[in-house]
Length: 191
Image (cartoon, rainbow, N blue to C red; front, top):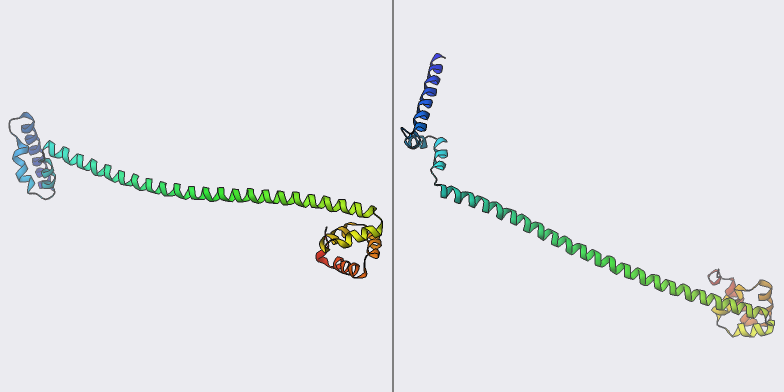
């Protein structure tokens, strides 16, 4: 143990002496020691780096910075490409949504037009019901008998039962039978 303590003290004193010589400028310890230290593993690697000129060090630093910039530019380019693809996908989705909105508006317009037509038709049929109801039964029977089956059924189904009975009695047996049969089928009943 004592030997290690003495050896450590010797190395410390030698280090202080060499540092003093280097700092005072009496002797260039660093330059003299570099060839010896360069041959030692791991120490030599660090010293080889120190042998670079300031221009070489600056050049390496610039290369390292340039590599870093290139990597970051590549990352940015990838992100831009990804954003561009997302924008395209969003644009396509927005186009699809807009197309569906147009289709919905068109369907709403058609539905509104159809509702208007149905309301108009309803009003016309109700008006015919009122007219045929106040007409003499034989005249109403002739008029209704001349209509196509669908219209005749709608008119008769909206009339009061007692009026329908009188009008059907005034029609030909074949036509009255045909209309009565169709009025009895569930699919011909309207609301």
